[in-house]
Length: 286
Image 1 (cartoon, rainbow, N blue to C red):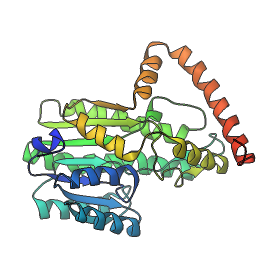
Image 2: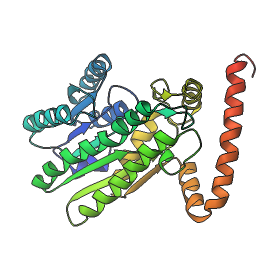
Image 3: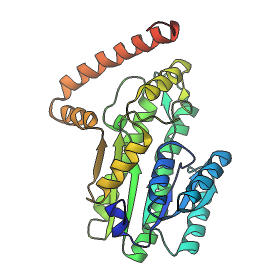
Image 4: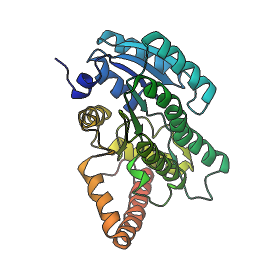
């Protein structure tokens, strides 16, 4: 018996997941592997990806690893072509790969800003551009683009990251409209802080790298929980998948009371920077 209704909708069980060397991408892969899916998994880190592939095979999934940078369209195209030739198509494409970036606008170098956009936005655009023709040909499919609550819960010190993730939301909404009359579903996953290694991979200001690691480590939400809940909700075909409940509340607050939202966010951001700075300065103090 399938663990997820989405598996029953796509009985050929073929999924392609980016950023699956760790974190949320690996959590998605593990959940689908347990349901017997054939998986194409990607990451820029070969060692992590090989370890993921070995793990997935032990729990019932067939995993083919592809090592490349999602910002490189040609390499992305080769991987998708190989996986499609092996499996005859792609039922679910999960554009998950991404990096963090923190700091005041003038603290983040323009190269770091560009890298964030290239990875987080263009990486998703590349995946969509490659998945859509395949799914049109087979007349069905599901694309899940992983954005972030930071796409709409925009706060100081997150300009590059929030801009990249807001772009993912806009891109997904446009494609959803283009495919509205087809059997191809496009959804946006927008979680808040999740316990993954993205904090360690954050670029930008040094202080913000430390803040990011601490906020991620303090999160009460695991990657496994997010992947499990998202896969359950995907069966409904909704455009927005926002996790957890707190993120949905803040999203509604911003839409209905934007001025109040901005005041709260500014105050909360300043308070968090003060708290985290104190924690860094005095790590042994409770």
